[in-house]
Length: 150
Image (cartoon, rainbow, N blue to C red):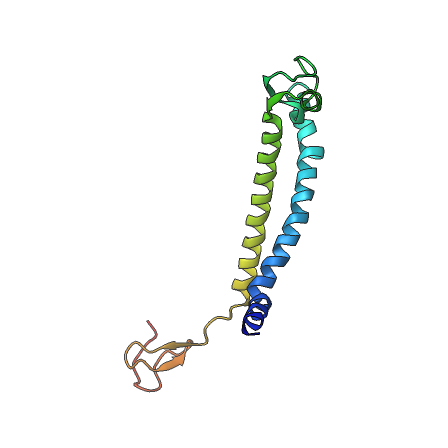
């Protein structure tokens, strides 16, 4: 029973629960970003570059057994059993990674800014002469009467 109790305590720690929530949200967010890249960003980029469909940008290393090259699309090459290097899919994945990285960066930056704003400024400081705690607004230490205005 001790193992079960320890395992339950481990699972209920805040960090593990937060991490699980982050993984679930991250998985959903990744799907949104993939759709953004594949369906919104890459079509205009491909159009600007002369009508290139990046998802169908590939190199054939070995022709398929059922049909010979050239293939009209990546799906046709895969259906024929061809061995391909899928450059377009890699470019889409790279752009997705950059977008996810930027989103996480800005999210962490916003959370850090919120945490900094929650920290209250110190109301006391230490007298440099007698090391007692005094108000931050004090010009003279009430304990040792030293001038601390400078």
